[in-house]
Amino acid sequence: MIFKTNIWVFVCCAVATLCLNTQTAHSQNQFEKELTQKMDDFLAPTPQINQQSSQTKAQLYPSDAPGGILIPSGFGGYGTYLFGGVGATYPEVYRNNKADLITSIGACVGNPAKAINFAAGLNMTDVHRLRDFSANFIVSRLLFTGTSISAGALQLFANKRFSDASGSTFYLAVSHAVQTVPSLTPGCSRLTYTIGIGSGRFYKKSPKDIQAGRGEHGTAIFGSLSYELIRHLNVNAEWTGMNLGISAGVRPFPVPLSLAIGVANLTRYTNDRANMVFSIGYPLSLNRR
Image (cartoon, rainbow, N blue to C red; front, side, top):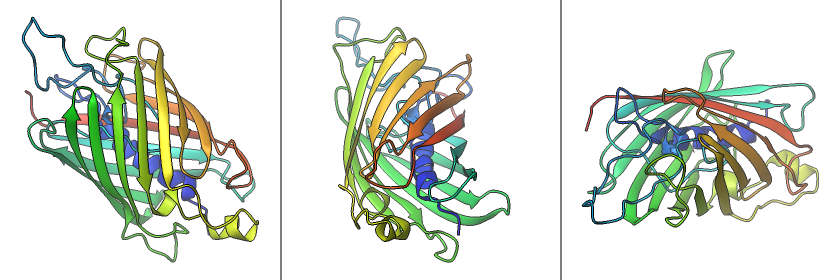
């Protein structure tokens, strides 16, 4: 059976990333900054939420490049749009010379400043055979200046015959874009952090981890720190509740296409090796505001 724990990390991130970044033109910045940020940077840098008068300092949102690849963000989508993404890892843990892919498509709707934003996605973890589907559902809400909260259900309805995930994952995450560190991109912050708690892939280790003597449970607490190194390029450090990872997120073109690449499993807390991770995402706006 193909080990897909890392891939699920990508799904969450991908959906999170795709929903969080928005754009005011034909498409939204991928994941409104990290679920929409959030698959990433995405172009039109920040949603025009709660616009303030010219005498008042504007609110800063996360950088328009991906702020992570392994964990979900507290920032969710803004507006109505479709999104899609692909995640990959190489090599798979506990297997030799194998790569693994996952794809995700979905949609979000709602204004998180006035009410909530709701995002739903469909994942496929066996891309070669076009099978092994599961679902993600995420609700997000802006709390106050630069801060957002999200709650989600991941890996729902996965077929246990094909997936070695520990069942469905539920989580709660809070993210903050530091208001005193403005980005080179207007309306964005250069420094963003996330802290969250979850079950499933944030807490339960795989059967192969248990067999290898690495225990049964992770910390359940996850978090990340993202810093904009140069315009449209972030460096990120993430703790998944199971392992440490570092990554870079970039929005290389003047379109809401986001890319992230990194190294996961840097500790021996889970898994048998470090491996490369990758994600790409793109959102398509269905309305303009």
